Image (cartoon, rainbow, N blue to C red; front, side):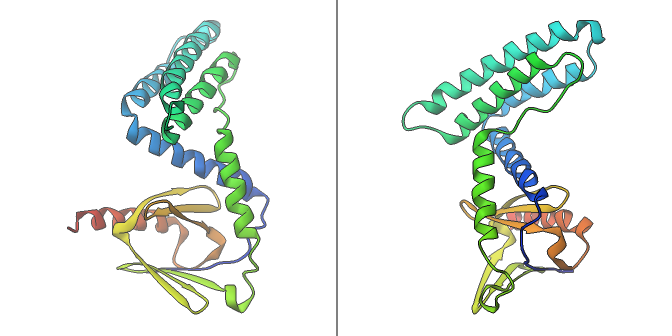
Amino acid sequence: MEFVFHLTDYNDPALEEETVRLLTQRLEAHSRKTMPGVWKATDSLNAYAAKGPGREKRRTRYRIYGVILIALGIFVLVPGLAEPGTPVLTGTGIFLIFSGFVEFALVRKRRPPKPPASCRKEAAKLLEQRRSIDWTRPENRTELRFDGEGMSIYAGEETKRVPYADMTSVFETENLWLLLYGAEQAILLQKKDLAVGESEGFKPYLLEKMEKGKEIP
């Protein structure tokens, strides 16, 4: 089995919010990995809220959750801002504080917290870079091929090979995938650019290969 992408323009306006969501997913996943205790408490609060008391008690309940989330956020944010600074702690703290303020605002309807400003800034930068390229020019034409061994990137005269063992995570929205590999490298893939293979099977295929790659010594 293989999947092949031929990259095209990234001009769809819907990609802006979807890219923010992808980066928010990445931030949360990284935070969950580095701060499991904080997220265990957060998940417990959310699970209780989903099956908690009726509408008449929601105002008090949301305020309590808001205080707890803001307190957790400050607890995480302060050491994150201390020298030399820890971006993961800072991002997690901001995320929790945002969630706490949202809880205060929720009385009749629960809404997801707004993405951190850092995710919006990074998403805008990523899309700006993608949109600055004319993918129709011969020197910019790029093909990505995923086969049994890994990912091959054919860009102009250059070829790059990335084994599945080097891939760390993949996130998905309606029109996009965000694939992370190496230290801090990322590829933003559009589902419309998938020329070979079915989109429904791409992420499960990657996850399976990445898991097997970790097992290889």
